[in-house]
Length: 203
Image (cartoon, rainbow, N blue to C red; front, side, top):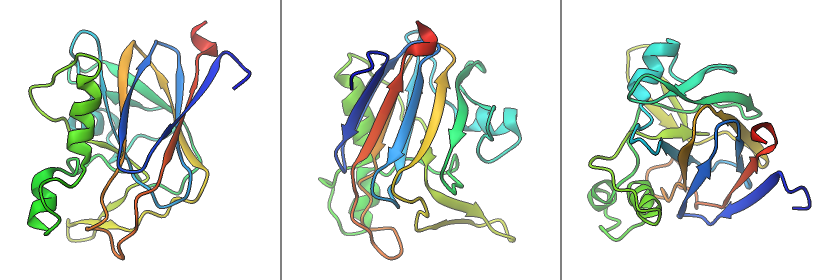
């Protein structure tokens, strides 16, 4: 892009990237084709990790509304939700897809997964996590029904829908273009995501 304060990165379907964000940067996750999930985690240089349990408790919501934050396991804010053009509802309730899930569904252990994408992307930055944190599941159509069951349906996001966060501290933000092609109803083929980073507010 010509504006030096802005950068765009395309994430191929089934792959993941880890991005360095400084405090004040804005990062947008864009669903280019529609119906695509974006699993995310965030890690600080000091080792704090995004925590869906604390985020739900602090916000008293299943997903933050505009102006609310994603919190770390040290109870400090990591990312504030600034914009959401999608219908949501998004999810903080389920773990990232992993090799075991695909094996149990007949896809084999070699199937790409958000679990592996998280760890591989962080490893490229020299970061190793002792455990896999739950996903910040953007565009995921997950709801709790009237009897308390967690129901996951086909994502309802449209081409061009985006979710924008502001970084509240220096962190590494990991995004996986979810490879899940076996558990959606009906099955959908994974597609690319786009990440847009605006550094102007941190200048």
